[in-house]
Amino acid sequence: MTDQWPSTSALASPSDGGADGRGAPLPSPPSPSRRRKPLALRLAARVLVVLLVLVGAVAAIVAFALFTSPGRQGLVALAERFSPSFGYPVTIGGFSDEGLGALRFTDVTVGDGTGPFVEIDTLALDWRPSALFDRTVSVDRLALGPTRLLRAPVAAPTPDPQPSSGLPLPLPVAIEVQALDVAGVAVDSTVAGEAITVAANGALAVPRSLQEPITIDLDAMVEGRLPGRAVVDVDYRPADDHLTAAIDLTAPP
Image 1: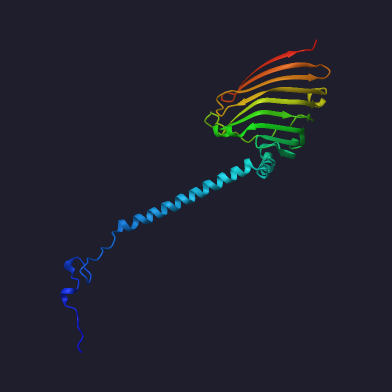
Image 2: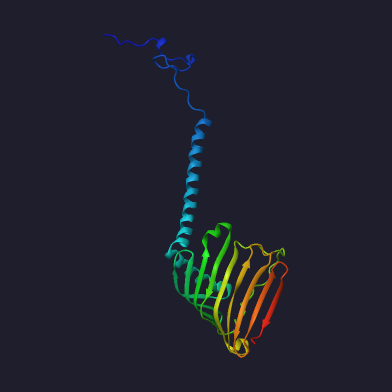
């Protein structure tokens, strides 16, 4: 028995476009551009996934820091850690919250290179976190409990002046304090010449653009050997270092 071999007519020839043994044309190999396109899409998709993961991680960290009590405790520790870099270290003895918008601090001290010079028994902060979306720290009420000013602070060392354009950089957020409530500050005699107590209420506004004025309004009552009332309106323009203050002093009858 002899082997039967297919005739040459059944084999694909270069002229028939690459047909298989059944006469069907063989698929042509993909062009280089068609091979690269799916790869580019896959790489772009992976980059997008990485970016989404990074954004999600940052959002989770911010949410944890602001919207959970342990996160806010961490922010308190962070403030204590970095406040010395501004020349006046802050320590906070206790912290509690009644929700995100109501923060409470106890045993707060502010110091300088020689030790604490301000002691605040309690500090309450009622604010609106949603205003951060408008790049504003909006405080409905900042209340200081019994406070002691032990001495005048020692000025923090100032770095060598650096050349600048002369225009102050904008702040990342504006600050608005609608109500400032100071129950009573006991001022040591070494500061005012005699021991006095000052209670005050007022408001504070710091715009993002420091070419606009910073405004402070205070209504203070002074108790001591010479009691009285002081209404103070301060307007400070950092752009040209210009300070305007209107002070109305009233002695008790």
